[in-house]
Length: 256
Image (cartoon, rainbow, N blue to C red; front, side, top):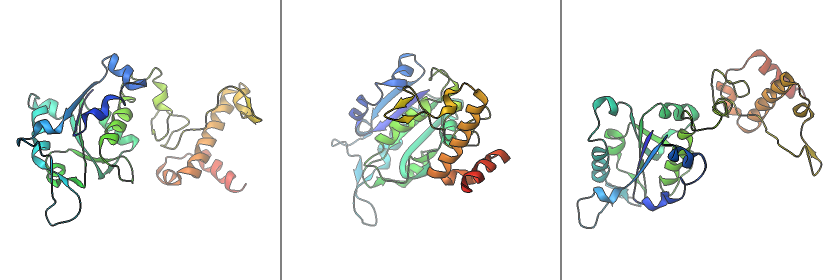
């Protein structure tokens, strides 16, 4: 996977990709991270990337020229076939919400160009004529798209083959409607996890987890995943694929 990140603050990315899974993926050449300074694609001597908005209003808007030029330059040597396997993502508070299915779709691409917004926003012509996807990482506003770009790289990279030591880890995670999933099947949250010591300050690990009965552990984890989803993200249950056993588990909890 090739990531191209276009930003006016390239130095921001000196730290986020030097640790953990991302660092290992880079070392093993599973991903190629390329950081591009948007100002290099300007034509004036002041390297201007923003201007006042038409119609008035507060703040500055990123100009279309350097962003068009950046993308055109990055993709100039690509064939039409390779361009079809390239996602051009504009990071914006007005974008589609980043979810696990969206991340999985991005992971199926060969290259992702991430355009980091700043200031009041980005000239709409970039979203209309350059980006293949306008993306938001949540219902809140960031100072710029750099943090969002780092999030996208992390979320997508861990879905790539061989990025994680245990491929099963991706299957059994929150929000993952994977056909092989057992605990998080249907796109609900993951179950609670515990490790040693079994008794910490009087807070004990549930007995079922140390009893050795794998089927009981599986049922307990599924039930806890359902209950945690109901408690923290009830909206996910509305579209989740629930079995009759799942519905019975939820009803039993409601009855106390």
